[in-house]
Image (tube, rainbow, N blue to C red; front, side, top):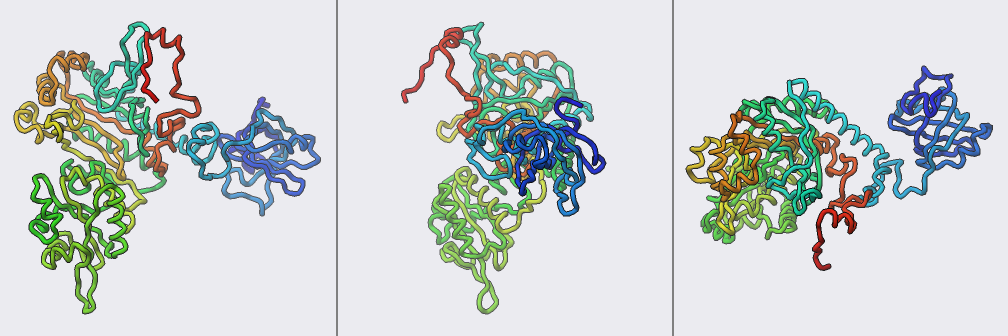
Length: 593
């Protein structure tokens, strides 16, 4: 018999009754039933109930074991009595009568429980992540992640893509986030960078003639953490293709991602034929470029109904250029209690408040508009607003005003809350949508300077001709994919023509010399017959987070950092030794504490 096991803790069935078996694993829990000891033994594959009585030579040893001790047991497989069968366990028809036991690894008093799914402080969970990972839910999340990665990899191979690995140590590149820099020992005073993404390398792979590339790629960005974003590193399904249009990329990725979500989504419906929503419309309707399209509510501009009205705050606001009043319809939200709660939400988010109107039935069976705004603007305007929004008795509408960028974030969150609380958002499904036609440039409101708003490597729609007009009107062949209010993919058709690239960077204030210096490899390669190409990257961590129905990305990462970008288990970041600093020719200049 094998030194540690003849079967796993998930193997044994009625067909094994009467056999002698050897199992190794962790003590999930111990129960004393009047002299009989029951030990639930757990390994990666499952749980098996083991029983020992005082007649066994191993009983004295069994009495010493505690939760999470690692043990080996030998024993006989027996059928459970009908009343003790556990239908929740794959091994629930049988149990092992222990004849021999060996302690493989004892455990100190546990800093957090493994049995059950009790809430525990995240800092403790991350410090003892090796214990946290033994808990069923987290363990299953990590296995789900492994299966999703394997599934995506196989789907890409099946449609003719080849997997290539790109460098982990490279040059610093301005791609929207802070680099993690790596000092060079051989080149004092110079630094490598960990790649924010394989962006330039995968484009160079296309120039090299490989046509269809993918990679399960690690990416490193020194970012502020969010619930759906890691502050240090993440993994993405990185894709690039040659001789393709934007629609070709959509047609390639839709079946890959939809198929994966159908395979691992627990039977939740997945929409097909994903809509393509222009960025401008997404910001108008939803207040965000990553809308949750499960929620059918769309915002509408209602400025004309407040211009010159008795509601002085909005009327004066509209006299300023670039301002508007936007309404969020709230079907079934027509109670003062709900309206007041949403107004307080806006105040908690930093706005002065959120105006509202709600429509209620009158004593004579008619309808009337209620709320502070209704009193100020009068019945004619409120009726026009109701008809514009398609609302009825029992409905409400909320209003925000100003320059859109000042209120869109709050409006987007309010729309989400309204959709969920009033039952408009179908939460038991996955809903995908492409957001397209992103603007390439934006104007800094403080300096007035033009800079890139999104990916600088995107091909402008219209090519060089588009760059001769108003930069703020230039749209790129750039796109994001949203699912249930999360961005899970971003990509573009690339700007592969050097003259168009130089012109785009010139508009954003970057001279030719600076472009040549920062993107030397790519700019040089584009002068030697670069094919039209495009691609995307899908965030694997975020996909698994959605599939596992988690709201925190750390619940689907094996060894994540905490919110301060610290690894509490390994003690990173750590202070370098004096010898390391001397070898790298570095001296620390720390801020005063």
